[in-house]
Length: 260
Image 1 (cartoon, helix red, strand yellow):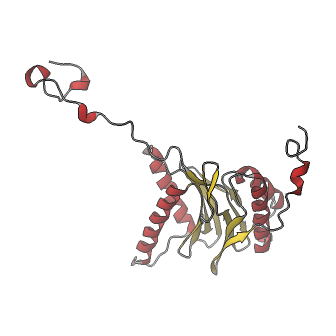
Image 2 (cartoon, helix red, strand yellow; image 1 turned 180 degrees about the vertical axis):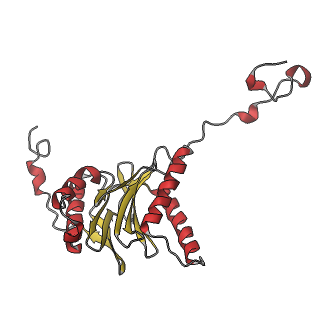
């Protein structure tokens, strides 16, 4: 008897001849989205009195190449929420199809209830965690903006590990390093959300997008902006960063004629 576990269940070679294992040979291990090729960068969102504002630029980069310049990374879910995606674009498209199927099922539901933003965020965080546990993660970091069951503004994030986080203002990608300090200065913790108007939130997002356009090599000056209020979702697509002025670059050491 052969006691090696690798041969358990196989016919005996001395009786049936050598075992043909050629069918087991493959070109390598099966891999999933471990190295995203086409990616989107920052998504920024802010709560204000009566709703949430969320924005993302329209660029999808192929590595360091600004390959696709008209990719909308803000997706509506009925009249309940807006999801902003950063990370792999193909995984974003998969989640978009998943959300579309859920939306259709909800619309045909007999109980008459609709998923709010908080329900949707909980569901997506479980999807991310399940895929991560299967070693086949969805390579995205998302922001979900809308309202919870008590009709209060809701904003929360979920990443490829299923980790969730909520705050009055959030950003993904490079925006977590450049936009969040700006938002914390404009909207400190001691300032209640009731004092933040829709105009203040939109102005802050535009300032953040301008800084990202100047500083993040994976961003661009065309963006989408969504406003979620009790009246519904207001989408503004193909917006342009205003008042672009690159003259400040001449004063940066290491750029142009400036010596390091």
